[in-house]
Length: 112
Image 1 (cartoon, rainbow, N blue to C red):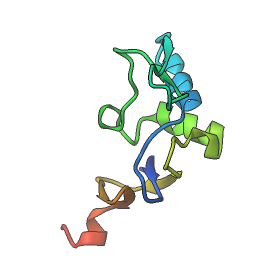
Image 2 (cartoon, rainbow, N blue to C red):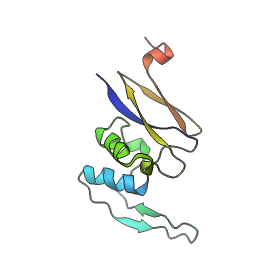
Image 3 (cartoon, rainbow, N blue to C red):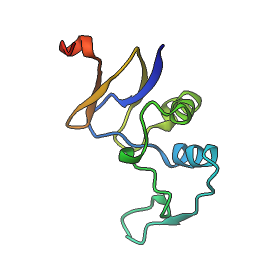
């Protein structure tokens, strides 16, 4: 059985664009509220707590996350991210160096 996994393919780090965060939360049945940064130099909009969409809280193989990235393509990527999808055939781990992620399976590492 295969499953799709979302990972970041560039320096910077995994992050979703605001549009992708909104779509993901709506698929999950949550209605996010937004606020604009109060910093004069920051013109970004952010999703309010408790629905911050942060990579630590999302399973990278979550079918809803995969659907958002497939639907939005490059528009799903947040600042300094380039989200991509790969298929895995069993257990996996995501290795990260300076934000670039690689998806590793047992045969890649000689786990067996």
